[in-house]
Length: 156
Ligand code: IDP
Ligand code: MG
Image (cartoon, rainbow, N blue to C red; front, side, top):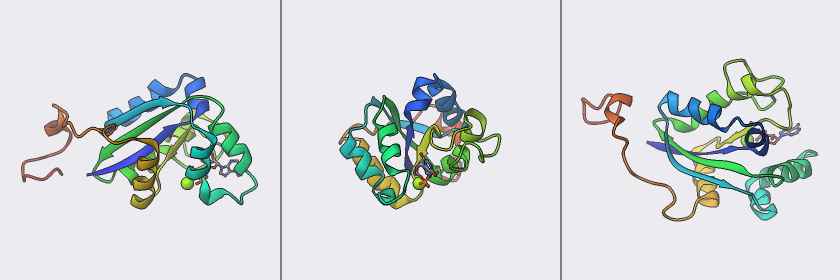
């Protein structure tokens, strides 16, 4: 099982799209193991987007991400990182395919609704940045045996 860090960005929260977007992940079968409505501090945004520090859009990105509340999620499942990145779609709303979250809900390249970790290393770092000890839960869902086939012992 893999856990990934998802952020519903300020535009998603302001536009009332939290339920629709969270619903997609729930319907897919990914398990929500952490959730937090919060405002990202400038320091936290700088850490999270450190790789983009030299890019022309960096200052605008940090201003955007710190401008209003976000919903931070930890999602768990086999291959959760790749699955959620596919569900999120291409970076720009103008380019993202219909059927993806960015493709279905946005047209902007800067306000692209959602962040998802892009590798196991990024997920580990980002989960650690946004969640404190004990905020990511290990409880198994009662419906777990209908999400994965456990007949061999391991989820499939
Ligand atoms: P990703 O979110 O699809 O992984 P990245 O290239 O890692 O995309 O960029 C991080 C974030 O920076 C994007 O989600 C978007 O909010 C913002 N961003 C990236 N490129 C641009 C741009 O050209 N203009 C404005 N914002 C951008
Ligand atoms: Mg990225």
